[in-house]
Each structure stands twice: as structure tokens, then as C-alpha cells.
Length: 139
Image (cartoon, rainbow, N blue to C red; front, side, top):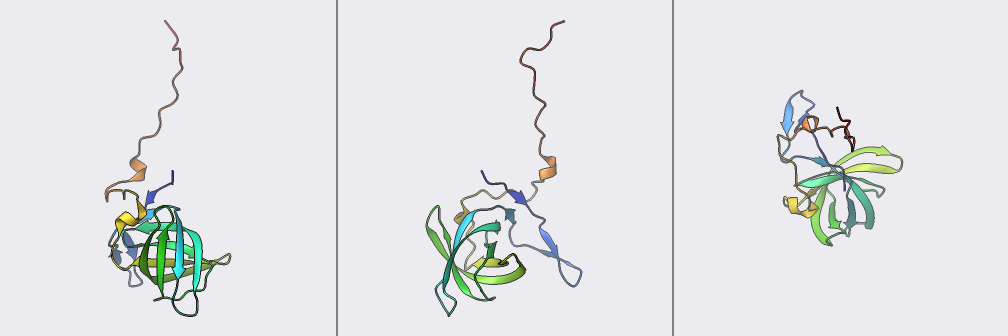
């Protein structure tokens, strides 16, 4: 099972304010295929997500890509394919670059996961109980 963790809802902007995200991010490594069929940089790359939300995802790509480029995301488990736009280019590291991809329309069901509620806090998870002895001592 994949590890999911919610992220903080707000991000700090350059002006020092806080911006609200449209939907909550979930940190999860899911297999995904990114296809580009337009322009001179045609490619198809199998990768995994860094995070997902109802509006898209963050992935690491080796392909050279530009902001505003139209791509298709393919969920290899379901073969569902959705049109998307590259909206963010991040850090380059080890031959890959962080790329934010947005669906043309919000599509939370594309990921086939249940998004955690807004008030879910992982620090409040119950810790597993200590293992019990199979035969408790008698008095």
C-alpha cells in the first residue's frame, strides 16, 4: 500500500501572505505515464508522482518540457487518459526536474484514492499498543 501524507493547506507567497490551495495535496508515489504529442518535444515517459490532488500532480521528469505545454496523463492501472497543462517547473536534480501538471478539469477520481479530510492530522494517529504476552503471569 502506498504511503499517503497530507500537506499543509497554505503556502507562503513572495509577498509574505498565505495562499489557500484549491484542494489538499497527498504525498504519494503512484505510477503514471506522461505523454506529449504536440510540438517538437514529443515524448512518453513512465514516472511516479511526488504528490497528487484533485487538480493534478507533481512529478519528476527527465524530458525537456516548458511551462504551458499540453500533455496527457495516463493512469496505467485504469488506462484512463486526461488532457493537462504544465503549470510549474521546479528544481532540477539528478537529471530530472519537478513538474507541476494540472488537469483541464478537476478530476479527483483519476487517482482512485480517498483524499484525507481537511482536519486529518497525522500527529494525532494512535500509536500501536505494545505487544502483549501470550500467557500473562498469574498471581
